[in-house]
Image (cartoon, rainbow, N blue to C red; front, side, top):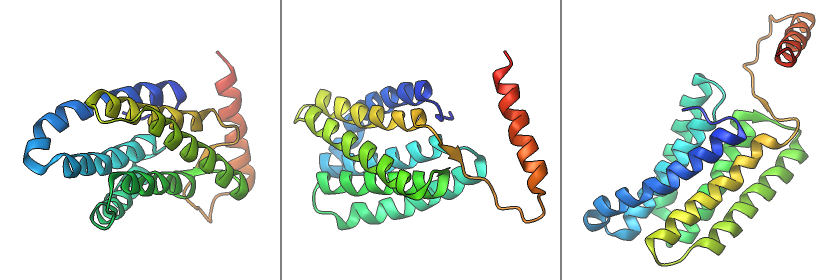
Length: 182
């Protein structure tokens, strides 16, 4: 499922939030709740990055990067809040650097606002119960959905040295005009 619009991303946030319940019921007794939740958070980050990716090539590359780095983060962080913070920063960096194109300062401002706001909202919703864990995950991902409402966000394109700039501008204009015709 590609989640590259606000609506799809908001629905995806709810699905990922709810999916933590069966995971913790099954994996919690086997791994312990801390490790079960750590594994889930890494898998959630990989899933969120791959779902937000604009193309298959970017999806595979970003998923591999996040899986490798996220697994390492799960091993070196001491607490779940540290892991959540580290994974959130990783998610924002991959989204801003690998998947989508924004101006550099704008990318920093957008990611700081969304990641910071998402973490604060998740912290507000978090608690010791399973329901609060579901709400915290949903809340963080819901705030991340606002990324697709930010103006000027474009998918990163492959660098092609043989592509004529006029043809590229013509293609962008054609796509824009086709999108306006209903």
